[in-house]
Image (cartoon, rainbow, N blue to C red; front, top):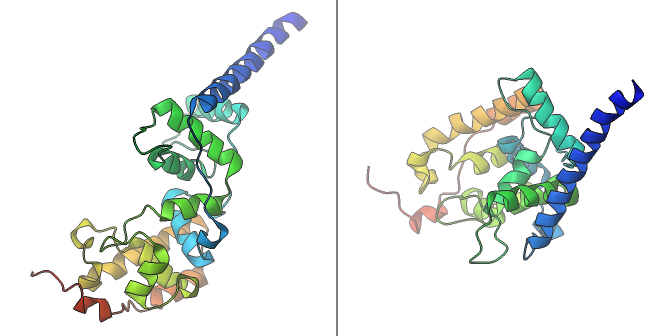
Length: 236
């Protein structure tokens, strides 16, 4: 009886050890690992909350480290319960996105196992704030802008640290519509529904209170029109 119970337990421990060994081996093969953003590049609180909602369903900005038992438990739960939507530990979707687009060298393309390994490593070593700051540098913001502080000054005429929740949601979502991606300031009528949709999803996820959501949705969509002189709207 005792030996019968021990055998599955030993097999499970062996599986966990094999997973960790595979991870460590692949990690050693990588030529480099991602460098975390500087503290000065971290996103202001309002912007971080909106960015988090793009990748993670939960409202709490927490990254759960991926250990062998975390992977085993996640896979087992999916196989047993067969949920309609795959549920992964908090922060994994964002970490996997960063791993997908990160390149250790200009000419190096990460393979799937390297991407998986980097994603696991990120959950163990980076905070949610660092992941968000790294990913925010990649997101297109129109007119070739990738730097969020510059985009805040360009579109809203203010510093990113001074953005309200409504302005942060507007800035993050203004390129969601592919029809207005190159010139979002020329399609203001399309921006508010997209912004308000993001705010509603944040409310449903628990990252906004009803009062915060109502206040942000009441905030008018106002853009800085000065850049239009340099970037005129395309003909209809």
